[in-house]
Length: 423
Image (cartoon, rainbow, N blue to C red; front, top):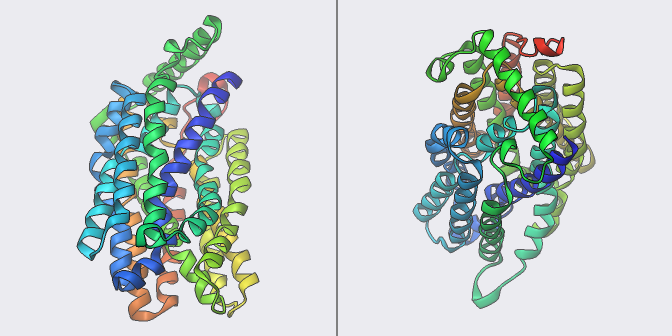
């Protein structure tokens, strides 16, 4: 397992940093884009969120292709196409062009996250999965830590008379193209093809994973299409919708929330300060994933994280204009929002396997990620019509509804062969 960890996780971690940076860097550029192109908060929120409408289109087909065809080929295709479109976003001039660029970026990136989650089930046993997912997905907060100062510096560029936000979007798209080319040669689809593992170790991990599949099959794991209507799958889809609403609502609007607390700070300073909550979230995410695997519990870990996020945003409404208190509470919100992911994504494969698990993971991410459209757009709409408090109240409600949905998921026991019960 140590050899698998060292081979796969650092590279997947790097891919997700680049993916999430290209997805969320639009939040750092929100004010200069709106100022230069004359976008209202509602227009910007709609454009930022429409990414997820395109994103949902290929989610289920993408995860099935990873399960039945090739993870490395599908992931490489995703990265090259999204890198090209992410760069082209820096060339927009009108709201319509902005909408199309964000929509097509979503189409290009569709299937990346659920594809990697399915890919990890090809290499990791249930008992090890939350730690692996946590290490992979801890790229989300770290991408904000790296992305904030990087984006701030790139936005200072004014080459060829173009604004800094344009160069930021163009230059941050290039690494995805290069890494996509590397992916096709570096990743290995399944353990039985891994020449970098000794034969005895290959046989061991293949045997462990096959034994888990037999346990699930004996327990009556549903087929691919039946999995879409499973009560647990539908509840997880609702919970992920609420979590994505909360996550992307905060990511895309946090720089502007901090700007409201500042006293005329520059966009570069606000962008750098926006990294602080994500710096706090990174070790929290790893610790929660480790603890979830150690205790074999998933639901409560996920729900508590969402409750902490909602509670932190709620308390933040009563702290006045204190930047210090605001950052402490935003950091707690970021820890909860990101900390939920490892335990959450370990749940679908705890009661499903094979194409059924791939289909369910695709559905959860597909429908759930429309919350990534709802969050930015609704927050922008409410900010315009009710002020700052209305948008944040919507995010708080999403956190509590998502936590309730997770707690309604029935417990499963997919590891009888290990002699333990998975919550």
